[in-house]
Length: 93
Image 1 (cartoon, helix red, strand yellow):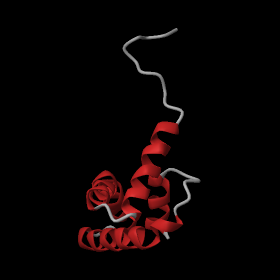
Image 2 (spheres, one colour; image 1 turned 90 degrees about the horizontal axis):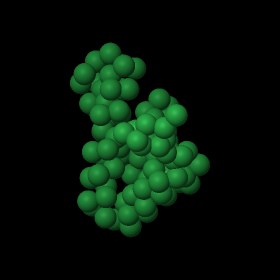
Image 3 (cartoon, one colour; image 1 turned 120 degrees about the vertical axis):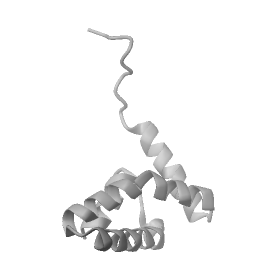
Image 4 (spheres, one colour; image 1 turned 90 degrees about the vertical axis):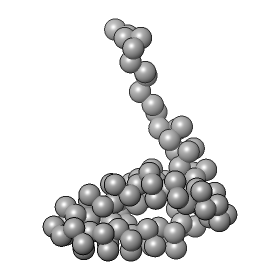
């Protein structure tokens, strides 16, 4: 059965290509791309940090540390997972 109002499920290739392009742009020093990376993932990072720590201020501090680590280690991102998954792992380690 096919409902024309429902878009087909993505196989992840478009998201992977977008992630990879964003990482490459950030690594090249594109400030707008870096801002987009933070904007796209800051809510997930903060909510996960809040869940892990149980304190809003500590979650904000951890969120900042996570994004510092993301940008320092961005050249190590190889695209073996979604960017979101890679950032998630940084939060929990």
